[in-house]
Length: 461
Image 1 (spheres, rainbow, N blue to C red):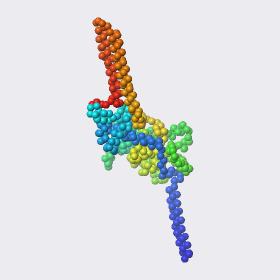
Image 2: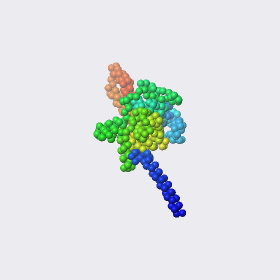
Image 3: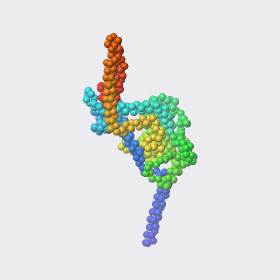
Image 4: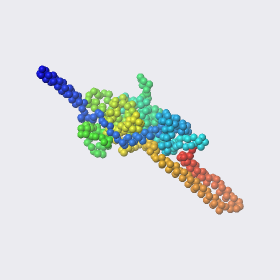
């Protein structure tokens, strides 16, 4: 009996030991001590999150701007604005409260006849819109180059027109890019229809080898020339800047060092002829996906784009399914912010392109868009001060003109003569007063009226 019990216990212990060994073997096979861990805890970087808090206000301001500019006279009654704002998800009386927060962008005035409150854009806002349009038109040749490189990264050499249209603002493409960029450059692009679907595709005519150079390759060359680093260390490496508070252990540091030295295929290289079933090929494809997202962000105007926009190019560029987890695995290269749209959108930043909340290499379109953010952040007290300065300048100009007219008439009386010659001189003076002086006087009043109309005077219909 005791022998039977001991044999059963030995059998039970044997099963437990085998199961534990099996689990140990499974854990060891899935361990990646020499590679970057798959799941990383997300560490917030408040610099990028604060940037997106401003962007959240800017997006809402752009929606209200489009509502006002869509009107015939580019003016809108407050009651009508409240009705249209319901389509944007605003609650009752929320639209009027919102536009009052930004007096440098929106101006509320009372119509002199109808006695109804109207809303329009200020002169500063109109100048910012005009500057952005001019910058957008001026950089169309650069946008053509961006679109060529973007299509060259796809597997089939073409992208869906709808996907490019959704992400057109990020890549600096105008709203009518289908005509101003694609159809006007038949030597680079052509529009084709899908065989099985009704979708349209933008297809590249010919791949230019000179454009098949990634932005990170230029950075590596610059680093090698400036710092003289070992060519073997930076040949396949990326610039890594971990966010503040990110814990870097010993084994993680070794894994990142090995990952930096591992080779990969270029995003512009055709990998259809390679056998992708081996472990080495999968590692190369994983690092190639990092390089593809890095290059895609480098092609954007502000070196950032939403994660949902990247997901549109996932199939065309061989990107992984779980993009968010994949990007969190490389927090030293990218930063994913959930701020800006109530957590519904995720904005991906290229960390190396920003320093202290600003682009390291800004462009004209980025600077024009940033001016709208500056108007959003300007204090309402500054707007009140601007109105007081305008009224002060108007009163000062009127006083100077009245003084000038009084001095002129006094000199006219002192120099006046009797007789025909005096009458002729007086007629000449009156003629001059009616032509030159009056025209200068009216020009000054026109300038003053223009300033007042633009700042705080109502529009008379």
